[in-house]
Length: 274
Image 1: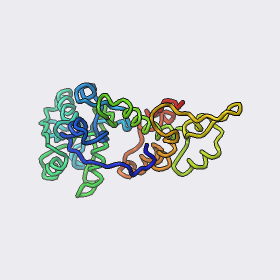
Image 2 (image 1 turned 30 degrees about the horizontal axis):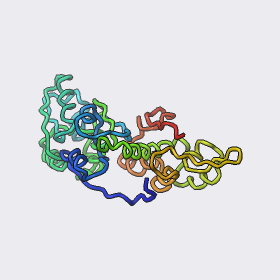
Image 3 (image 1 turned 30 degrees about the vertical axis):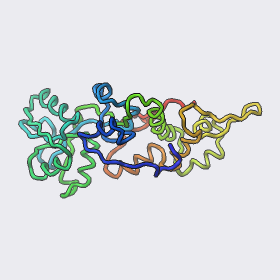
Image 4 (image 1 turned 90 degrees about the vertical axis):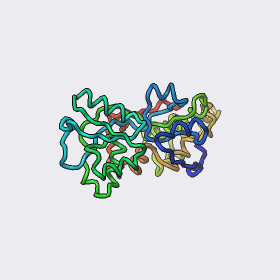
């Protein structure tokens, strides 16, 4: 969004401190595995701008210990404290009559230590997070299995401070640009060629190319407070949504699933850029 993919400072924030960091101004945007919920939207001084990963809560266990959640009667299920995961696990236990002890840890490092030490029969979190931890598990990923059931909706995406509507628009359209680019078939590798040769008016608008009508040239500026070629800059430097997914998430074993484009049966869909 600034023409420089490196013009950002990444700040680690603990689960319990993430909204405080946003409210205090220590960070400008919270980009983390943070679920968009009504109470967070209304009670944390945060505005969620755009879902960039549709997730769901699952369960990870030692391989061979259980085949399904239904087998986990009277289990100790470990979760991170202060997350939607904690309440979801309690509800799932009650709904299924499984009588789980839901054991909460202050952070995921402590949870990992507890899991390795045998304090937990299962580890419940967003399936994306479980997949990430499984990929770097000390005994190897094959030592752990993520059970097939997904028992919640966990839409993840960036949040900004309430009231900062212009910044919210910028963050939203930065994400949407990556999705729209994939819809158009534009990648970091071909964006320069497409920008130079396309006759598609929609793509010209999107990439900040002049459109000439009756001898008058116009470049679309939707009033977002961004350079008119911001989408070009984003795609050129970091790629479209699919490229980003393949670079960061596919190596962990995550599949596109519902995060595929709407044209491929998924939920990823960008409003028109016009």
